[in-house]
Image 1 (cartoon, rainbow, N blue to C red):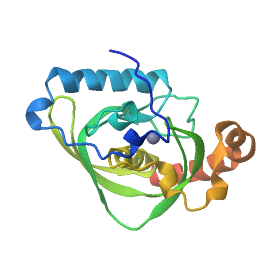
Image 2 (tube, helix red, strand yellow):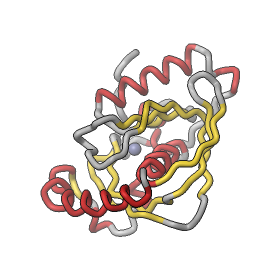
Image 3 (cartoon, rainbow, N blue to C red):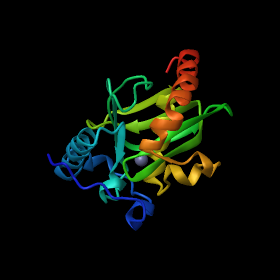
Image 4 (cartoon, rainbow, N blue to C red):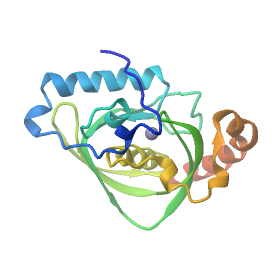
Amino acid sequence: MTVREILNIGNPELRVPAAEVSAGEISGDRVQSLIADLVDTMRDANGAGIAASQIGVRLQVVVMEVGSNPRYPYKPPIPLTVAINPSIEFLDDEMVMINEGCLSVPLRGEVPRHVSIRVRYFDQHGAQHDEIKRGLTAGTWQHEVDHLNGILFIDRVEDPTTLATWDDFATHHRDAFIERITKFVERVGS
Ligand code: ZN
């Protein structure tokens, strides 16, 4: 298990679509050590999620976890989740603007995300999952699966004036965002 270097925006690897993991490969050393490295790297960086693309590995693997993270006090918890070959289906047209950050991008910005999605994926044991995700948790899934398609959140920012450094977000936008998103989380329950 190793904390790996996280690639930054501008690195062409972040734009390369990741390949599917074959079912027989999931239990193998290559994928299992990739998962362990992703978990270590995500936790070391205090992220809510990380995709294999962000450490330069072209495989469809993401990990997510939200505990009581001071970086995201408004985020409902996500238990440690490993998603291999994840796919997303949008369940309706309801959208929410989420102020997102990314371990590969030094800015935050407002991104429209679907509120209700269905996700299908394999976990680290090769078990198949088919689940409904809502709210900010659904937003995290959409962000991470975008990485596997070579998409960064800033590609989806519709109003560039919402872009801010972490410090300026904290100084100028954080309180208003937390107030708005806390009401949203109370309404959708996640
Ligand atoms: Zn990201």
